[in-house]
Image 1 (cartoon, protein in one colour):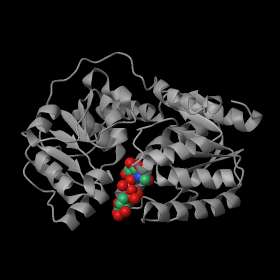
Image 2: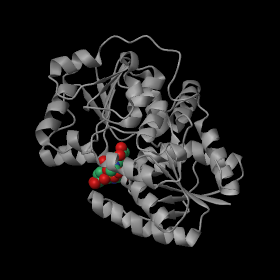
Image 3: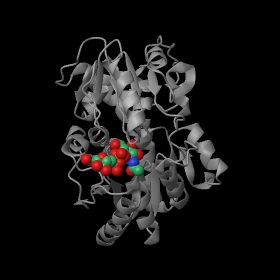
Length: 357
Ligand code: UD1
């Protein structure tokens, strides 16, 4: 039996890690195709090393381009790769251009397809990820929904027959890593004891120079230091707009590997982000989060005020929102108990062996 996972962008390496571990515990042959969508050392290799992931069987080296160009290149190269490997089942993760392209490549060759993190919806069709999620869910044979909310989205689209609620693989890896870094902290100089962790990479925040300048100015005026590990898109767009990211109270850094990110998130007073993953990690680690977006595909994080959406803001109300007092921790996590990857990998093996879930 051979299962092939196709990944390509940073958040997918995070989701791949616990699934890879689960498959290896079951003794299933698991091959990894890396599309090459993310190629910088700290966006890709650093995560593979951090998670002890094996070298990808194939790296397709697609690099950057428009969404259509990236998707088309991945579709064509994954098609060729799948014909070489001849898997029993293909697994795709999340909502990137790699996800949708690999999903199409698999179904067009008739390989069974599973989608990890199915059913997420932001209901914002202007996000490229929203189209990617919907198309991938409708193409896949097995849909692994991380939460009940995700499942209800799939039910609404008539996909419940192929779907199962498994819990969230990102919660598996987040909780495990948080424990490990508490015991063995990574080597990083944090700015001071009280600091904010910020990340920014969504095109609607980075690609409009006026909006980007507004956000950067607001972060620079925070009363405590803001650690900003900058995504390549943010650096590139800031540079071309002539906006300095080293302003006021901002501490600029390179992207962090996962262990260091979790350590830093855990130690921070508050998190500001437009990342889907970090909103949820903030929730799981009990750190208040402010999300610079109009909506979230993780509405569970809004419960109890752990996450607040703040899109059109003044510096004053952003400071107020970020430094609000900590909500009361609810004992129940909507993201599962840290065993999602075990459930998923057992279902995958069963499906390949017996054709049933
Ligand atoms: C992609 C995903 C997004 C995910 C994010 C995580 C899609 C549609 N979007 O967005 O869902 O949250 O990854 O990071 O797939 N770049 C580099 N080096 C790299 C990677 C990117 O320099 O290793 C630069 C390139 O100029 C590229 C830009 O960053 O054009 C954006 O990268 P891209 O993969 O297109 O999208 P992300 O914004 O990273």
